Length: 470
Image 1: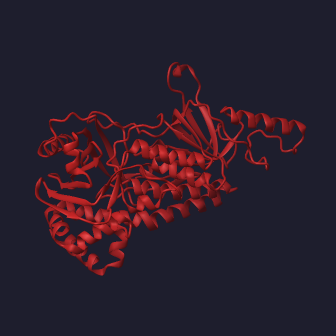
Image 2 (image 1 turned 135 degrees about the vertical axis):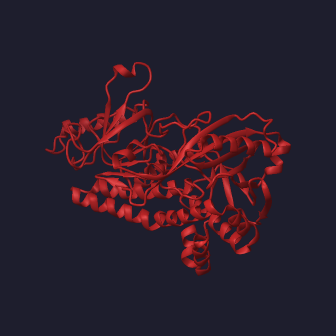
Image 3 (image 1 turned 120 degrees about the vertical axis):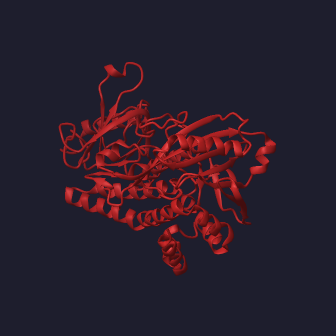
Protein backbone atom coordinates (compact mmCIF):
# COMPACT_ATOMS: atom_id res chain seq x y z
CA UNK A 1 0.00 0.00 0.00
CA UNK A 2 1.30 3.49 0.60
CA UNK A 3 4.63 3.55 2.39
CA UNK A 4 5.71 6.32 4.67
CA UNK A 5 8.69 8.65 4.86
CA UNK A 6 10.44 9.51 1.77
CA UNK A 7 13.93 10.81 1.07
CA UNK A 8 14.98 9.57 -2.38
CA UNK A 9 18.48 8.43 -3.27
CA UNK A 10 20.26 5.60 -5.07
CA UNK A 11 19.50 2.92 -2.50
CA UNK A 12 20.89 5.15 0.25
CA UNK A 13 18.61 6.07 3.11
CA UNK A 14 19.21 9.56 4.42
CA UNK A 15 18.73 10.56 8.01
CA UNK A 16 17.36 13.88 6.76
CA UNK A 17 13.60 14.11 6.71
CA UNK A 18 12.01 15.48 3.57
CA UNK A 19 9.19 17.62 4.80
CA UNK A 20 10.35 19.76 7.67
CA UNK A 21 10.40 22.99 6.04
CA UNK A 22 9.15 26.40 5.44
CA UNK A 23 10.00 28.68 2.62
CA UNK A 24 11.49 31.53 0.78
CA UNK A 25 8.29 32.50 -0.99
CA UNK A 26 7.68 35.30 1.49
CA UNK A 27 3.96 34.72 1.72
CA UNK A 28 2.43 36.70 4.49
CA UNK A 29 0.61 35.90 7.67
CA UNK A 30 -3.00 36.87 7.90
CA UNK A 31 -4.03 39.65 10.20
CA UNK A 32 -4.53 39.41 13.94
CA UNK A 33 -7.90 38.87 15.54
CA UNK A 34 -9.75 41.92 16.78
CA UNK A 35 -9.14 40.93 20.40
CA UNK A 36 -5.47 41.81 20.03
CA UNK A 37 -4.63 38.90 22.32
CA UNK A 38 -2.77 37.09 19.57
CA UNK A 39 -0.71 40.00 18.29
CA UNK A 40 2.84 40.44 19.54
CA UNK A 41 3.43 44.08 20.45
CA UNK A 42 -0.08 45.22 19.48
CA UNK A 43 -1.53 48.24 21.25
CA UNK A 44 -4.51 47.02 23.27
CA UNK A 45 -5.95 50.51 23.63
CA UNK A 46 -8.56 49.97 20.93
CA UNK A 47 -9.21 50.78 17.33
CA UNK A 48 -8.32 54.37 16.42
CA UNK A 49 -7.37 55.92 13.12
CA UNK A 50 -3.74 54.84 13.51
CA UNK A 51 -4.77 51.27 14.27
CA UNK A 52 -7.10 51.20 11.27
CA UNK A 53 -4.31 52.47 9.04
CA UNK A 54 -2.00 49.79 10.41
CA UNK A 55 -4.62 47.14 9.74
CA UNK A 56 -5.03 48.40 6.18
CA UNK A 57 -1.28 48.28 5.67
CA UNK A 58 -1.17 44.76 7.10
CA UNK A 59 -3.95 43.64 4.75
CA UNK A 60 -2.04 45.16 1.86
CA UNK A 61 1.09 43.25 2.84
CA UNK A 62 -0.94 40.03 2.88
CA UNK A 63 -2.30 40.68 -0.60
CA UNK A 64 1.23 41.33 -1.84
CA UNK A 65 2.48 38.11 -0.19
CA UNK A 66 4.69 39.94 2.32
CA UNK A 67 5.23 38.69 5.84
CA UNK A 68 3.96 40.41 8.95
CA UNK A 69 6.28 39.48 11.80
CA UNK A 70 3.89 40.91 14.38
CA UNK A 71 1.40 38.11 13.77
CA UNK A 72 1.02 35.01 15.87
CA UNK A 73 -0.54 32.24 13.81
CA UNK A 74 -3.20 30.07 15.38
CA UNK A 75 -1.62 26.89 14.00
CA UNK A 76 1.68 26.27 12.23
CA UNK A 77 2.00 22.90 10.50
CA UNK A 78 5.49 21.64 9.64
CA UNK A 79 5.57 19.34 6.61
CA UNK A 80 3.23 19.32 3.59
CA UNK A 81 2.83 15.59 3.03
CA UNK A 82 -0.55 13.89 3.51
CA UNK A 83 -0.42 14.28 7.31
CA UNK A 84 0.56 17.94 7.25
CA UNK A 85 -1.81 18.93 4.46
CA UNK A 86 -4.67 17.16 6.27
CA UNK A 87 -3.82 18.93 9.52
CA UNK A 88 -3.62 22.30 7.78
CA UNK A 89 -6.96 21.71 6.04
CA UNK A 90 -8.69 20.64 9.27
CA UNK A 91 -7.43 23.71 11.13
CA UNK A 92 -8.03 26.17 8.30
CA UNK A 93 -11.55 24.99 7.49
CA UNK A 94 -12.51 25.98 11.03
CA UNK A 95 -11.58 29.57 10.19
CA UNK A 96 -8.26 29.70 12.02
CA UNK A 97 -5.06 31.35 10.76
CA UNK A 98 -2.89 28.48 9.54
CA UNK A 99 0.62 28.42 8.09
CA UNK A 100 1.80 25.26 6.33
CA UNK A 101 5.60 24.95 6.04
CA UNK A 102 7.37 22.66 3.57
CA UNK A 103 11.08 22.20 2.99
CA UNK A 104 10.84 21.27 -0.69
CA UNK A 105 9.30 23.06 -3.62
CA UNK A 106 6.00 21.48 -4.64
CA UNK A 107 5.33 19.14 -6.30
CA UNK A 108 8.23 16.89 -5.25
CA UNK A 109 8.93 13.20 -5.63
CA UNK A 110 8.12 10.85 -2.77
CA UNK A 111 9.27 7.27 -2.37
CA UNK A 112 5.93 5.53 -1.92
CA UNK A 113 3.96 2.63 -3.33
CA UNK A 114 0.99 4.96 -3.67
CA UNK A 115 -1.82 2.60 -2.70
CA UNK A 116 -5.02 4.40 -1.64
CA UNK A 117 -7.14 2.03 0.43
CA UNK A 118 -10.63 2.71 1.78
CA UNK A 119 -9.57 4.45 5.03
CA UNK A 120 -7.40 6.82 2.98
CA UNK A 121 -10.21 7.62 0.56
CA UNK A 122 -12.65 8.20 3.40
CA UNK A 123 -10.28 10.67 5.10
CA UNK A 124 -9.88 13.00 2.12
CA UNK A 125 -11.34 16.53 2.16
CA UNK A 126 -14.83 16.94 0.70
CA UNK A 127 -14.71 17.34 -3.06
CA UNK A 128 -11.20 15.90 -3.37
CA UNK A 129 -10.75 14.13 -6.70
CA UNK A 130 -8.24 11.31 -6.52
CA UNK A 131 -5.64 11.45 -9.33
CA UNK A 132 -5.79 7.69 -9.86
CA UNK A 133 -3.25 6.10 -12.19
CA UNK A 134 -4.95 2.69 -12.00
CA UNK A 135 -7.81 0.90 -10.27
CA UNK A 136 -6.92 -2.45 -8.75
CA UNK A 137 -9.31 -5.38 -9.23
CA UNK A 138 -6.86 -8.27 -8.83
CA UNK A 139 -3.99 -9.24 -6.54
CA UNK A 140 -1.36 -11.86 -7.30
CA UNK A 141 0.23 -13.32 -4.16
CA UNK A 142 3.51 -15.24 -4.35
CA UNK A 143 5.93 -16.73 -1.84
CA UNK A 144 9.49 -15.93 -2.83
CA UNK A 145 8.41 -16.01 -6.47
CA UNK A 146 6.70 -19.40 -6.09
CA UNK A 147 3.14 -20.61 -5.53
CA UNK A 148 1.66 -17.59 -7.29
CA UNK A 149 -2.09 -17.25 -7.19
CA UNK A 150 -4.25 -14.39 -8.41
CA UNK A 151 -7.46 -13.43 -6.65
CA UNK A 152 -9.93 -11.16 -8.45
CA UNK A 153 -12.83 -8.92 -7.54
CA UNK A 154 -15.54 -7.34 -9.66
CA UNK A 155 -15.42 -4.27 -7.46
CA UNK A 156 -12.35 -2.07 -7.16
CA UNK A 157 -10.12 -3.06 -4.25
CA UNK A 158 -8.06 0.13 -4.04
CA UNK A 159 -6.55 2.83 -6.23
CA UNK A 160 -2.99 3.78 -7.17
CA UNK A 161 -1.62 7.32 -7.25
CA UNK A 162 1.66 9.13 -7.81
CA UNK A 163 2.62 10.96 -4.64
CA UNK A 164 3.81 14.25 -6.19
CA UNK A 165 0.39 14.89 -7.75
CA UNK A 166 -1.56 13.52 -4.79
CA UNK A 167 0.34 15.59 -2.22
CA UNK A 168 0.11 18.75 -4.32
CA UNK A 169 -3.67 18.40 -4.57
CA UNK A 170 -3.96 17.95 -0.81
CA UNK A 171 -1.98 21.15 -0.30
CA UNK A 172 -4.22 22.96 -2.79
CA UNK A 173 -7.26 21.94 -0.75
CA UNK A 174 -5.60 23.26 2.41
CA UNK A 175 -4.92 26.55 0.60
CA UNK A 176 -8.52 26.78 -0.60
CA UNK A 177 -9.62 26.32 3.01
CA UNK A 178 -7.51 29.34 3.96
CA UNK A 179 -4.07 27.96 4.89
CA UNK A 180 -0.99 29.90 3.76
CA UNK A 181 1.73 27.70 2.26
CA UNK A 182 5.44 28.49 2.39
CA UNK A 183 8.12 26.33 0.82
CA UNK A 184 11.90 26.17 0.60
CA UNK A 185 13.18 26.98 4.12
CA UNK A 186 14.02 24.36 6.69
CA UNK A 187 12.54 24.32 10.18
CA UNK A 188 15.53 23.83 12.45
CA UNK A 189 13.70 23.66 15.78
CA UNK A 190 10.76 24.73 17.89
CA UNK A 191 11.03 26.56 21.20
CA UNK A 192 8.40 26.77 23.91
CA UNK A 193 10.52 28.74 26.37
CA UNK A 194 13.21 31.39 26.10
CA UNK A 195 13.68 34.88 24.67
CA UNK A 196 12.06 34.04 21.32
CA UNK A 197 8.79 33.10 23.05
CA UNK A 198 6.77 36.13 24.20
CA UNK A 199 4.37 34.26 26.49
CA UNK A 200 3.23 30.81 27.59
CA UNK A 201 0.52 30.68 24.92
CA UNK A 202 3.07 30.86 22.14
CA UNK A 203 5.50 28.53 20.38
CA UNK A 204 8.46 29.78 18.33
CA UNK A 205 9.17 27.92 15.07
CA UNK A 206 12.74 28.72 14.02
CA UNK A 207 13.50 28.65 10.28
CA UNK A 208 17.01 28.19 8.89
CA UNK A 209 17.97 30.18 5.80
CA UNK A 210 18.89 28.17 2.72
CA UNK A 211 20.33 28.88 -0.71
CA UNK A 212 23.04 31.31 -1.73
CA UNK A 213 24.42 33.30 1.18
CA UNK A 214 22.47 31.30 3.73
CA UNK A 215 25.35 31.33 6.23
CA UNK A 216 25.27 35.12 6.24
CA UNK A 217 21.55 35.43 6.85
CA UNK A 218 19.88 35.30 10.24
CA UNK A 219 17.38 32.69 11.33
CA UNK A 220 13.72 33.59 11.05
CA UNK A 221 11.19 32.99 13.81
CA UNK A 222 7.50 32.29 13.23
CA UNK A 223 5.14 32.38 16.23
CA UNK A 224 2.09 30.19 16.76
CA UNK A 225 -0.37 29.21 19.46
CA UNK A 226 -0.11 25.56 18.40
CA UNK A 227 2.29 23.58 16.22
CA UNK A 228 1.70 20.32 14.36
CA UNK A 229 4.79 18.31 13.40
CA UNK A 230 4.26 16.31 10.20
CA UNK A 231 7.83 16.42 8.97
CA UNK A 232 8.54 12.78 8.20
CA UNK A 233 10.04 9.83 9.99
CA UNK A 234 13.29 11.68 10.81
CA UNK A 235 11.20 14.48 12.28
CA UNK A 236 12.83 17.35 14.14
CA UNK A 237 9.47 18.15 15.69
CA UNK A 238 9.18 14.50 16.73
CA UNK A 239 12.58 14.77 18.41
CA UNK A 240 11.34 17.84 20.30
CA UNK A 241 8.28 15.93 21.47
CA UNK A 242 10.37 12.87 22.37
CA UNK A 243 8.87 10.34 19.96
CA UNK A 244 10.48 6.90 20.32
CA UNK A 245 10.45 4.22 17.66
CA UNK A 246 10.57 0.45 18.24
CA UNK A 247 10.41 -0.79 14.62
CA UNK A 248 12.48 0.59 11.77
CA UNK A 249 12.31 -0.89 8.27
CA UNK A 250 14.17 -0.20 5.04
CA UNK A 251 12.19 0.19 1.83
CA UNK A 252 13.79 0.25 -1.63
CA UNK A 253 11.85 1.16 -4.72
CA UNK A 254 12.27 1.64 -8.47
CA UNK A 255 10.00 3.53 -10.87
CA UNK A 256 10.35 1.52 -14.11
CA UNK A 257 8.93 2.77 -17.43
CA UNK A 258 7.79 -0.18 -19.56
CA UNK A 259 6.44 -0.67 -23.10
CA UNK A 260 2.70 -0.52 -23.57
CA UNK A 261 2.48 -4.29 -24.09
CA UNK A 262 4.08 -4.89 -20.68
CA UNK A 263 1.92 -2.24 -19.03
CA UNK A 264 -1.20 -3.91 -20.39
CA UNK A 265 -0.24 -7.17 -18.68
CA UNK A 266 -0.25 -5.39 -15.31
CA UNK A 267 -3.24 -3.08 -15.75
CA UNK A 268 -5.64 -3.41 -12.83
CA UNK A 269 -3.49 -6.00 -11.03
CA UNK A 270 -0.84 -5.74 -8.32
CA UNK A 271 1.67 -8.31 -7.11
CA UNK A 272 2.55 -8.94 -3.47
CA UNK A 273 5.49 -11.29 -2.92
CA UNK A 274 6.32 -12.56 0.56
CA UNK A 275 10.09 -12.15 0.76
CA UNK A 276 13.14 -14.15 1.90
CA UNK A 277 13.95 -12.19 5.10
CA UNK A 278 11.67 -12.31 8.15
CA UNK A 279 8.91 -9.73 7.76
CA UNK A 280 9.91 -8.77 4.21
CA UNK A 281 7.77 -8.50 1.12
CA UNK A 282 7.83 -6.97 -2.34
CA UNK A 283 5.23 -5.29 -4.54
CA UNK A 284 4.47 -4.25 -8.09
CA UNK A 285 2.01 -1.37 -8.49
CA UNK A 286 1.11 -0.41 -12.08
CA UNK A 287 0.65 3.28 -12.88
CA UNK A 288 0.02 3.60 -16.59
CA UNK A 289 3.28 3.08 -18.47
CA UNK A 290 5.31 2.93 -15.23
CA UNK A 291 5.59 0.09 -12.73
CA UNK A 292 6.42 0.95 -9.14
CA UNK A 293 8.48 -2.03 -7.91
CA UNK A 294 9.69 -2.17 -4.34
CA UNK A 295 10.66 -4.30 -1.36
CA UNK A 296 10.78 -3.71 2.39
CA UNK A 297 12.45 -5.48 5.32
CA UNK A 298 13.87 -4.76 8.75
CA UNK A 299 16.67 -2.20 8.92
CA UNK A 300 20.08 -3.78 9.29
CA UNK A 301 19.61 -6.04 6.27
CA UNK A 302 20.58 -3.42 3.70
CA UNK A 303 22.65 -5.65 1.41
CA UNK A 304 20.10 -8.47 1.54
CA UNK A 305 17.26 -6.05 0.89
CA UNK A 306 19.04 -4.58 -2.13
CA UNK A 307 19.71 -8.10 -3.42
CA UNK A 308 16.05 -9.01 -2.91
CA UNK A 309 14.96 -6.03 -5.03
CA UNK A 310 17.44 -6.88 -7.79
CA UNK A 311 16.38 -10.54 -7.84
CA UNK A 312 12.72 -9.55 -7.70
CA UNK A 313 13.06 -7.23 -10.71
CA UNK A 314 14.99 -9.87 -12.66
CA UNK A 315 12.44 -12.57 -11.84
CA UNK A 316 9.68 -10.34 -13.16
CA UNK A 317 11.50 -9.93 -16.47
CA UNK A 318 12.03 -6.20 -15.88
CA UNK A 319 15.82 -6.12 -15.53
CA UNK A 320 16.23 -4.84 -19.08
CA UNK A 321 14.30 -1.64 -18.41
CA UNK A 322 16.10 1.36 -16.92
CA UNK A 323 14.37 2.87 -13.87
CA UNK A 324 13.55 6.55 -13.99
CA UNK A 325 14.08 6.73 -10.24
CA UNK A 326 15.68 4.34 -7.73
CA UNK A 327 15.13 5.38 -4.15
CA UNK A 328 15.20 4.28 -0.55
CA UNK A 329 13.51 5.29 2.66
CA UNK A 330 13.10 4.26 6.28
CA UNK A 331 9.72 3.64 7.86
CA UNK A 332 9.44 3.89 11.63
CA UNK A 333 6.72 2.65 14.01
CA UNK A 334 6.36 4.34 17.35
CA UNK A 335 6.76 2.66 20.70
CA UNK A 336 3.36 2.07 22.24
CA UNK A 337 4.07 4.45 25.14
CA UNK A 338 5.74 7.13 23.02
CA UNK A 339 4.42 10.68 23.51
CA UNK A 340 2.34 12.41 20.86
CA UNK A 341 2.63 15.93 22.25
CA UNK A 342 4.74 18.30 24.30
CA UNK A 343 3.21 21.50 25.52
CA UNK A 344 1.49 23.12 22.55
CA UNK A 345 3.18 20.88 19.98
CA UNK A 346 1.52 17.79 18.47
CA UNK A 347 2.94 15.22 16.06
CA UNK A 348 1.14 13.10 13.48
CA UNK A 349 1.82 10.77 10.56
CA UNK A 350 5.38 9.53 10.11
CA UNK A 351 6.65 12.17 12.54
CA UNK A 352 4.68 10.37 15.25
CA UNK A 353 5.66 6.90 14.00
CA UNK A 354 2.08 6.16 13.00
CA UNK A 355 1.78 3.45 10.35
CA UNK A 356 0.61 -0.14 10.12
CA UNK A 357 3.48 -2.34 11.35
CA UNK A 358 2.82 -5.40 9.17
CA UNK A 359 2.23 -3.86 5.74
CA UNK A 360 3.93 -0.54 6.67
CA UNK A 361 0.97 1.23 5.06
CA UNK A 362 1.28 4.89 5.99
CA UNK A 363 -0.96 7.08 3.84
CA UNK A 364 -4.20 6.28 5.63
CA UNK A 365 -2.50 6.73 9.02
CA UNK A 366 -1.10 10.07 7.85
CA UNK A 367 -4.46 11.36 6.61
CA UNK A 368 -6.38 10.22 9.67
CA UNK A 369 -3.87 11.37 12.27
CA UNK A 370 -3.32 14.64 10.40
CA UNK A 371 -7.01 15.47 10.48
CA UNK A 372 -7.17 14.75 14.22
CA UNK A 373 -4.01 16.77 14.87
CA UNK A 374 -5.43 19.76 13.00
CA UNK A 375 -8.70 19.62 14.91
CA UNK A 376 -7.01 19.36 18.31
CA UNK A 377 -4.39 21.96 17.43
CA UNK A 378 -7.26 24.44 17.04
CA UNK A 379 -8.43 23.59 20.55
CA UNK A 380 -4.91 23.97 21.89
CA UNK A 381 -4.56 27.34 20.14
CA UNK A 382 -7.72 28.48 21.94
CA UNK A 383 -6.41 27.34 25.34
CA UNK A 384 -5.45 30.24 27.58
CA UNK A 385 -3.34 28.28 30.04
CA UNK A 386 -1.04 25.29 30.17
CA UNK A 387 -3.56 23.12 32.01
CA UNK A 388 -6.19 23.41 29.31
CA UNK A 389 -3.60 23.00 26.54
CA UNK A 390 -2.40 19.83 28.22
CA UNK A 391 -5.97 18.55 28.51
CA UNK A 392 -6.54 19.03 24.79
CA UNK A 393 -3.23 17.36 23.93
CA UNK A 394 -4.19 14.36 26.06
CA UNK A 395 -7.54 14.19 24.27
CA UNK A 396 -5.67 14.09 20.95
CA UNK A 397 -3.45 11.27 22.23
CA UNK A 398 -6.50 9.36 23.44
CA UNK A 399 -8.19 9.71 20.03
CA UNK A 400 -5.07 8.42 18.27
CA UNK A 401 -4.55 5.49 20.61
CA UNK A 402 -8.22 4.48 20.61
CA UNK A 403 -8.26 4.26 16.83
CA UNK A 404 -4.91 4.02 15.06
CA UNK A 405 -3.18 2.68 18.18
CA UNK A 406 -5.49 -0.33 18.29
CA UNK A 407 -4.87 -0.99 14.60
CA UNK A 408 -1.12 -0.82 15.18
CA UNK A 409 -1.35 -3.31 18.06
CA UNK A 410 -3.09 -5.85 15.81
CA UNK A 411 -0.58 -5.10 13.05
CA UNK A 412 2.31 -5.89 15.38
CA UNK A 413 0.73 -9.24 16.18
CA UNK A 414 0.25 -9.98 12.49
CA UNK A 415 3.86 -9.04 11.73
CA UNK A 416 5.13 -11.38 14.45
CA UNK A 417 3.15 -14.27 12.95
CA UNK A 418 4.21 -13.35 9.42
CA UNK A 419 7.89 -13.23 10.40
CA UNK A 420 7.69 -16.81 11.71
CA UNK A 421 5.28 -18.40 9.24
CA UNK A 422 4.98 -16.49 5.93
CA UNK A 423 4.08 -19.70 4.08
CA UNK A 424 1.11 -20.32 6.34
CA UNK A 425 -0.24 -16.80 5.89
CA UNK A 426 0.24 -17.16 2.14
CA UNK A 427 -1.74 -20.38 2.14
CA UNK A 428 -4.53 -18.81 4.18
CA UNK A 429 -4.81 -15.73 1.98
CA UNK A 430 -4.78 -17.65 -1.28
CA UNK A 431 -6.76 -20.72 -0.26
CA UNK A 432 -9.20 -19.68 2.47
CA UNK A 433 -12.06 -17.60 1.08
CA UNK A 434 -12.96 -15.78 4.35
CA UNK A 435 -9.36 -14.53 4.52
CA UNK A 436 -9.62 -13.10 1.02
CA UNK A 437 -12.97 -11.53 1.91
CA UNK A 438 -11.36 -9.93 4.97
CA UNK A 439 -8.54 -8.58 2.77
CA UNK A 440 -11.05 -7.00 0.37
CA UNK A 441 -13.08 -5.53 3.23
CA UNK A 442 -9.94 -3.88 4.67
CA UNK A 443 -8.70 -2.50 1.37
CA UNK A 444 -12.13 -1.09 0.50
CA UNK A 445 -12.55 0.43 3.94
CA UNK A 446 -15.54 -1.64 5.02
CA UNK A 447 -13.52 -2.51 8.12
CA UNK A 448 -10.02 -2.12 9.54
CA UNK A 449 -7.57 -4.76 10.70
CA UNK A 450 -8.51 -3.96 14.29
CA UNK A 451 -12.22 -3.90 13.48
CA UNK A 452 -11.97 -7.30 11.84
CA UNK A 453 -10.57 -8.95 14.95
CA UNK A 454 -12.88 -7.00 17.23
CA UNK A 455 -16.04 -8.08 15.42
CA UNK A 456 -15.15 -11.61 14.30
CA UNK A 457 -14.49 -14.09 17.13
CA UNK A 458 -13.21 -16.66 14.61
CA UNK A 459 -10.53 -14.22 13.40
CA UNK A 460 -9.46 -13.55 17.00
CA UNK A 461 -9.19 -17.24 17.77
CA UNK A 462 -7.27 -17.88 14.57
CA UNK A 463 -4.72 -15.16 15.38
CA UNK A 464 -4.37 -16.47 18.95
CA UNK A 465 -3.73 -19.97 17.57
CA UNK A 466 -1.18 -18.71 15.05
CA UNK A 467 0.68 -16.82 17.80
CA UNK A 468 0.92 -20.01 19.86
CA UNK A 469 2.44 -21.97 16.98
CA UNK A 470 6.22 -21.90 16.80
